[in-house]
Image (cartoon, rainbow, N blue to C red; front, side):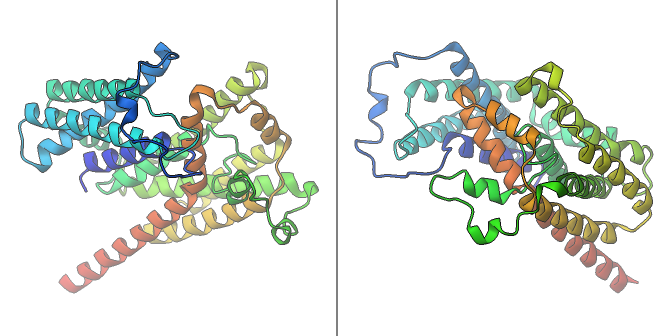
Length: 367
């Protein structure tokens, strides 16, 4: 899949998930699913809601226009028109599906705003041109020392950074299946599993180990995205880790106040960051295939530790400040992203190991 198609698929999946969140309580519609299109204009709406709906579909219209122009060999004008219609159809379909969810209310204002956002994105794409849009990933690869296969991995790193906005039991604690299961009503953690939870006195050591394994895995994943022997590789490996620190700090300041911006940086987190950086420096010499296997192992260990570690005070404070409101859909998307991320990363590493082995076999046969 070309780079534009990969970004389009990822963004469209995010839009679908956020629109149908919380994905529970599905029911038969009590009325015709298109009835909201003929109902009176909503009494309660805000400019903020409309702006969010417009902004959410603008990237969709832009990416879809470029993808259709390439896929169907169309000029940008008809591709933009098709993209606008497709964005409007997607919004209409998702709003109708909301009629099957008890906590969601379909609205034609949302459809209009989404369609306008898709049209705006398509108009931007038509003014920029398909080639320039498709050259963005190439420009990034030329500006940064990225390998040709780097697009899906770059998506994973971006998703990991976004997931840091969600309150986690410990620093960088993605893949927390225990909390995800317990968040659903009527799904308490099984007593047998509760017996495996680690004692609170081990919390700093568990956090240090989990953070160090995560930092190591992120560094190894970043190394896999870089061209062999590229200049600035060491600095590039540090970029996602520094960005994650900045993201955690910003999230803490937003939910707990600026005075608590560094509340997340506990003794365990500090030790884990230091140990992870040292491990990266010591293991930077191993080959690509070994790095990928080590990344899988590090992610597996970190995920297991985070699942059986007791939640710390920082997590409980963040959860108490974590609200819904206008950002309920976004919060649900972050939760899903944080839960699924390490498993997607391990699957990506496995796929990279397989393709690397195939290339070696093919090269050996040619010799």
